[in-house]
Structures are given as structure tokens and as C-alpha cells.
Length: 396
Image (cartoon, rainbow, N blue to C red; front, side, top):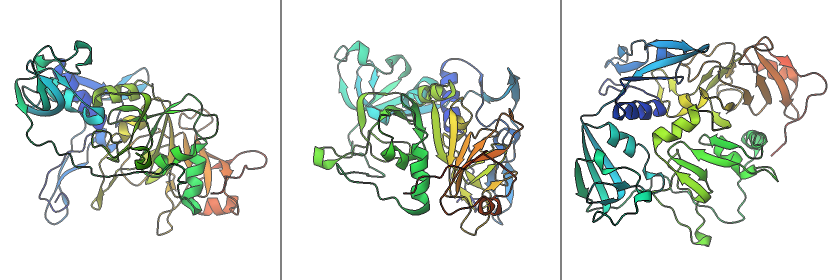
């Protein structure tokens, strides 16, 4: 519908939406965020609506930006809904709300921002029956409370596992997965993207303990539920890809604005995500192919603009054999000068995104049977090679 001109859509980073809602609830007219700085999102030109003939009818305007301490930030206006509809697990008659698992998501942020707030709850009890320390959202934000009559929750992506089951990875993708797992260091807080990055969590090195964060509101992400252990998919416990998950002992849940605050604040050490293209200067394109594919940026713009180490995993070339690592990305950017490392099926590149060593890429590992000349032929930008013998990537 979007590409045929029947629907107008404004693409906004997930963390930015949450922060704009929270700003409205806090009485703040605007915020500054690093998400999207230096990209088409900030500079303008992302299609809002297409014409029936496929041409762009309406595009976004440039957003105001400001430099603080040498870094560019995008100004975003507060987002204040006329009416907010929120869903809670439990409420009392004063409107105090409790959410369950990852179901908080953007519900509290919508509630604090809305001019009028309607809250639907699965369970409603009398005032005083909820423990004051367990309430997630004060009733001061709720105007109308509704008893939910139907509480069936649809699980969009049921994922289960079996104890002892080994993830089947082979070939080039398996090589990427196993190499990505070597980025984990003991004690890290880590955010993993959908697909290959998530698969890497099945190959955490011995003696390394990490804690996984899901940007939809969970720190302490566990494995998929195991029916043999009495675990079953629960719609209130999902990851950012809407897959059913479990929570480890000591896990915590929170709303979207807090989730992205810990990301932007540098409390997540490592981000591993996929990409469509990377440039030699550390630019990343991962969300949009004009006129063909509209993935949306999700939380990726917030993640890559944060102080965390950013690792991109992807196949070295596209299906048609064209390079995906370029001197400059040809697709709209998710982040500018944000990538620290690129892991492909052919090699591993370190990226000097800060220009501390003159900028550019350095080949630091290579796959067995692949030569430096092979990598050069598949890469559309110059790169340096580590001195001495090049370490080999582990085979799946």
C-alpha cells in the first residue's frame, strides 16, 4: 500500500518515538538525540508518500540539528497523542497499572504523553490490593479504566527449543555466526539483531558470561522456551523480533523509553546487527531500499549511534555478486561512521570510524581457502591488511 500511494508513512527510530512520548509527558517541548544524525532521516528526503505511478509524492523535511561536544544531534519535537490506548496486566480502581514481562513496551510512554488515556487491564482489583512497590505506572496518568473481556494473546512467532539440541549452522552463514560469537567478552551487556546475530548467542565461548538486552524491554534475555522443561511460549515474553523467549534468573523488564535510555547512555557494551551495505568509513545501510523494500529502522538507528561497540554481520556480496562493502553506501544510511567491525563469510574487517589511524578498513582475519586478492575482487573500496600472517576464521 505504501509503494502504490495508498498509505502515508513517516519512518521514525523506535527509541526516538519513545523519547518523544516521554518528553511530552514530562512537559518538555523537544529533545536532542544522536539517532539518525548525518543520515537521510536528519537531512530530509525519506519518502512519506508515493504517487500511483511510483514516483515520490511527499518527502520528509530536514530536521534541526545541533552539535554538542563535537557530536551532532537531531532535535525532535515532543509527541503528544490526543488519545492513548494502553493495555496492562493488572490494575486497581485508582488506575495504578502493572505490566507483565515485555508487554510494558511503549504502553507507559503512551500513557504519560496522552491528553486522554484509556487503560484496559486483564485484572482489576480494589485500591490498596496492589503492593505499592510493584506498581509500574501511577493512576495519575489514567483517565478511564476498562475491564478486558477477551484476553487471548496471539503469538506472532512461536519459537521453542529442546535441551541439548545443537543449532544447525553450516557453510558461509555458520562461519559468520561462530566468528560473531567471539566478540562476546565476560561481563558484557549485549544487544543482538535478528537472524545471524541472535544465532551467535548459541556459541558463547566457555567461561564467558554475558547478559542479553532486548530493546522492547528485557535485560536478561534467555533461550527459547523448552517444552521438555515445562516451558511454553508466552506472548508476554518476546524479543524484538517478536519471537517467544524466556528470562534468566535476575532478569528485569522495563518500558521502551528506559530501554533506549540505557542504550543511548552507553550501558550496553556491544551491538551486533545485520546490514545491507557498509562503507569504508563505517557507514551502515540496513533499513530501506527506495521503491522496493521498506523495513523501517526499528531500534537500529538508536543502537548504532550509541557509545557501544557496533559489529555488523552480513554476506560479503549480494545475491547477484555485487559488493556490499563500498567506498560509499548507495542506500539510505542507518548510521554515519558508526561501525567498528564487519564480519562476513570471507573475512573480518576492523573499521577506523573515528579516523584515528587515517580512517578506512583493515583486514584482520580471513576464511580458509580465500585469498586477499579474492577479498579485494569482492570489495568495492581499498583496505589495508594486518601485518604478518593473517589469522583464519573458524570453520562451522
